[in-house]
Image (cartoon, rainbow, N blue to C red; front, side, top):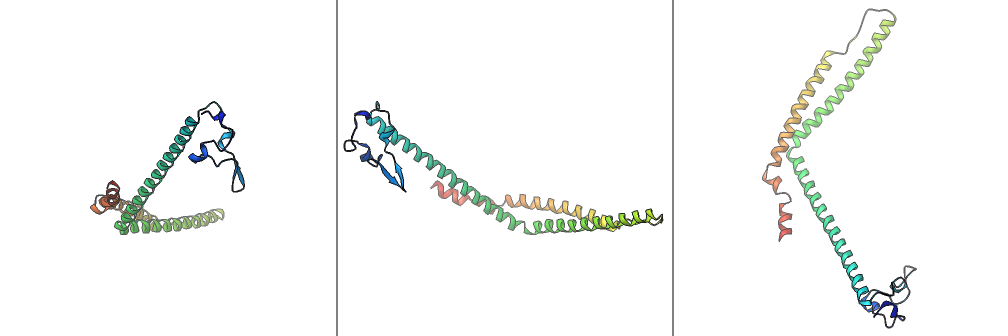
Length: 185
């Protein structure tokens, strides 16, 4: 049977296939046009039904792939999160040392900048009035800052070594393995 031969909803096979609401219908106040309003009359009804079912199946497969990809990405992110948490716990003291040294360096840099600005202001004023006295930033501050930066490099290297050690532990490597094993079975 050709689509052009269908002139009444009572002889149309589309409602029985679940592909047509059977005439005009409303969904949420919006009219839904039946497929017969836009089809090519020369097409065979069975071919049309097969093509619609094929497109529905293709869409469902596409949605399934998207869902699987989202779930896979979610599982991967969860595993990465658990590994980061374990790494943070394993390297807590090293991370704390690095953070503390960075905070001290920032503090000493602020002190050095402030002392430099005061020394510069004092020296400009004395130069303006032609006084011979000049001020400098206390060299102990600069030396302490240099020492802290060296300690920071050492602490960062210790942290990297500890992280590498952590990544080689069985506990770290086993994170996520149980989920992968369950998925395989």
